[in-house]
Length: 207
Image (cartoon, rainbow, N blue to C red; front, side):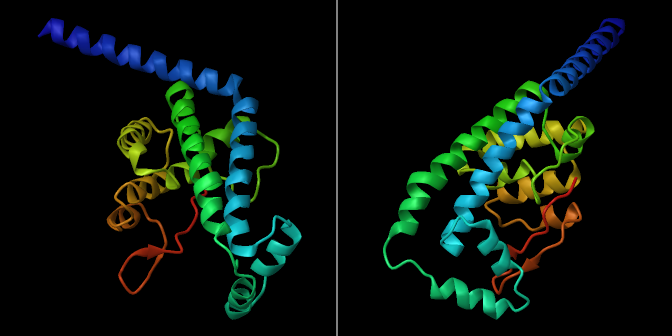
């Protein structure tokens, strides 16, 4: 019994030291980590906005998003629909490959310094962040081939406090093939559903 207790204590101390080392490393590398994540986020959002609005001009996309009428927004989108198959090429040649790359980078960062949640980032990084910025989006855009690893990381990082409830629930919902709304409900995430009961218009995590 004493041997077992001693083993548990050693394991606990080792785990605590490892977490403290990751936190220190995260603080030391914060500028490098955030600058990479910001670039990846802007790239991710710009490509997806281009599919919808057919422009990279932020002044135009913002003006459309700020229209009071949803119908006006839809009218603009439909009036500028691609006449070729360029949208499919953008998805296949740019968006999907970048989704894989950004997912792999977030996995590597998480293994190295713990999950870089928005709350952890703001603890050490003081400059302004892009509106809506949250590294969780890379796991939400991840391919199925990464889900087993992502689920392992989510369980570990949520348990050790590096990942908040909203991020955890959002990720678990995505890796359930976006079918299990219980992960949104259990973690207090606001959303609407379509006629099939699938979650849509999910509130972005802010912690």
